[in-house]
Structures are given as C-alpha cells and as structure tokens.
Length: 244
Ligand SMILES: [Zn+2]
Image (cartoon, rainbow, N blue to C red; front, side, top):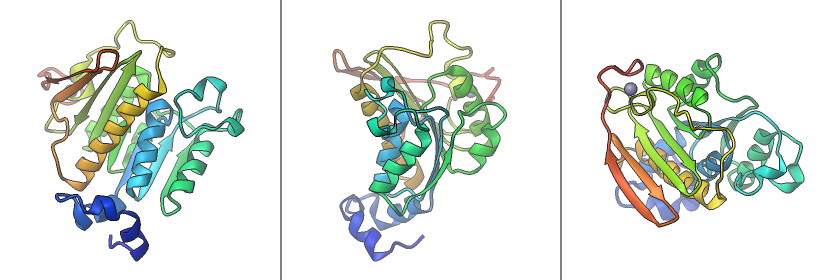
C-alpha cells in the first residue's frame, strides 16, 4: 500500500520513528482491525488507530448513547444521546481521518457473529466488558490465527496482554472460567479506560507493523491509584480447551 503525498504529510512525525518508518506506515494503511465495543476502552483504541492511519476499522457495539456513557466513551457526544453508538463513533472518527474506511456493526459480538466479524480483519482489540463476549472472541480469533489485544479494567486497576495464536497463552489460559465477581456495570474513570486504550492501540500498531516487543506471554497490570505497574509472565495452559 503506497502512501499518497497527503498521507506522507499527515503521518510525518511517526514515520520518523526509526524502526517504523514509511514501510511501517504502509503496513498500517493496508491493515484492518476489529474493535469489539467502542465504549470507554474501545473509543480510545479506535481514535488512536484512526489517527495513526489504520486502513480499515470494524466497530461492533449495540445500543444507543446514554448519559452514563459520557464520562469515558470519548466517541459519544451529548448531541447524540438516544442515537446509535456506532453512528456517533463513525462520525467522530471520520472528522479526524476522512481516509479511514469504517464498517459500523450495531451489534455486540456473540458466538453466532464472531466468525464473520473476525474473518474481515487482521487483528482484534477486545474491549468487551462481559466474559461471554470475550470468550467467544478469543475462541474465534485463536481458531482463525488472528492476534488479539486483550484489555480489561475495574475501578483504578487495569490489565493488558497480547495473544499471538500458536505462540502465546490465550484468554482461556488466563481465565479457564468467568470470574464470579465480574459484573456488567463497575466503577471506573475515563482516564483509566483511556490509559489502557492508548496502550492497546500501541500494541496493535506494533503487531501490525512488525516492530517493538508486544506483551506476548506477559500481562501488564496497572494500579492507577498508587501508580504501580508490573509485568507478570503468563504461560499457555497445557489443557486449555481453546489453544492447546
Ligand atoms: Zn489458551
């Protein structure tokens, strides 16, 4: 994917990153990413990937914008209350990057649509809060050999890892079952989801352009209350029903 003069001008500052350069930018232009839910995490992932010049984004998220979305879902705006989330997201992303191709799917990912959504892309960023969705995504992406950036948050804690099928542990290795304490609505600040969203976008950019060291077999955990960051080594589970 050769760059146009306009693209060279827009991405000039990142093209000067030594191990990225114009070849990396061309890879991003030819790449497509599925973002499962464009809420607190996914909004920021999508915005950063749009800014970085990803060629195509597939956004999957059901429902309409609610007042309680606005503290963290940065692609949702007050004037779009009561209207579809994916439409708000698409409109905001196009303002930033009109060259970006967007497929807006007004559905959440589930077992029945996962295969068809994952098929369309090179990489998945999993920003879904519910384990049913995350397990369905993990199963499909591992089966299709597509890398997944897995991120999660609760209160001021967050974690992120990158799954490279065939090489690293997957979500089911980490969580053989849904954690019993997990729930749909939880305490969180937009600055927490935004922090993890930026990290997830950087992971996606590195994997797609093939530079740097993604969080493969490593789980980065963050406690933003104390600003304690640590990296834990994780391992493929020998009995994992998904990846072994
Ligand atoms: Zn596994």
